[in-house]
Length: 155
Image (tube, rainbow, N blue to C red; front, side, top):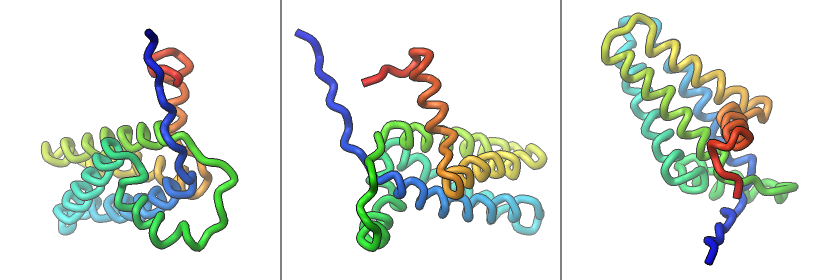
């Protein structure tokens, strides 16, 4: 008997973009706060929150992420139906990549690596901004690339 894999239900692709827009703003604030010693602790605290949000997205997926819930309740009802639904796995993987990058920033910050927190937050900002502004998800592209080379199974 062979195992049957059920493809996950699709998600509105505008939801992750909505979350990426909020994340972009928070990460940009984090970068600027991290550049000044007087506000460094606030930057670290904000990155802790952002990292926790990435952890939620990486484990529960975008549809159960706080931004996804806000999108579903307040934004989605005001929009026309999406032209197509998106596989939730690549955006969930992108959240994992964000978790890794933000987590690295926390570690670098904890060990007082000069500009470590700012650089990690800036890298995460670039990825989030590309998704929000241009609908280009770097984490999703990594997911697809890993599928192509066989490290992630296609379902």
